[in-house]
Length: 234
Image 1: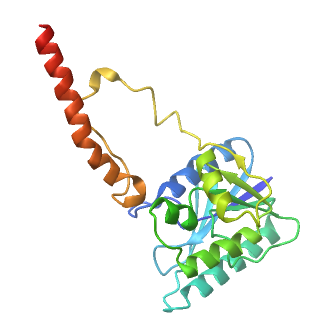
Image 2: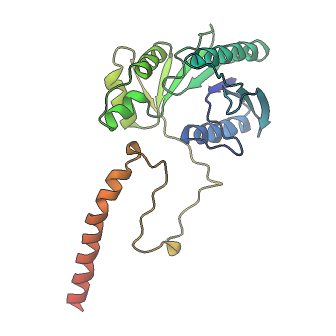
Image 3: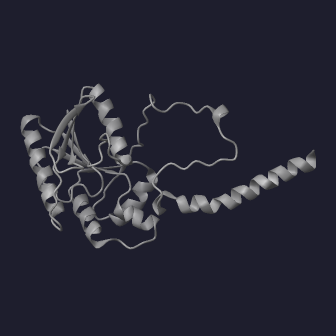
């Protein structure tokens, strides 16, 4: 079996990447260990074409278009061309992409196209209580029409997304993201810092930072009440 992931976020030293990039790297490496061929195709951070093999995963980073207003067209054209090239040499069984990844991707017979719902534009528009961007909304709808199957990283993402795409969705399978147990281990509670809150992620509305800050006063009040009770009991 040969699985191809479409993403621009596959980790590259010296450049930032998002959660989707981390997810693809984690699952791609494990798939290779289980004798599954894995390719990753995406747009490079720089204006050059690159190919490298990391832990058995073949990554194709394509030259980024600089043509204002039409970069999406030429970037998609490059991805389509590369997929055909790979498929000709090493037939692809499955191609996976996030929500709007298939918008301008041409389908090839005998390849199954899977969208993994990480939380796309429609999902986050609702989460942030804002309007749908017409261009991004169009791309997601176009992409969903091409999907053979859908996988969601949580039941919540599946439920919210299905509300917008009932027309294109028959069924969504929920498969939670994997965890690399070589990097993440059972927490050592003895190292916990008392009365501290840790946030990890982008500082933006959709990550819940505002709600976390708003909760500070509630948490502080609870701690003060508990301390007062202990003093009274003492």
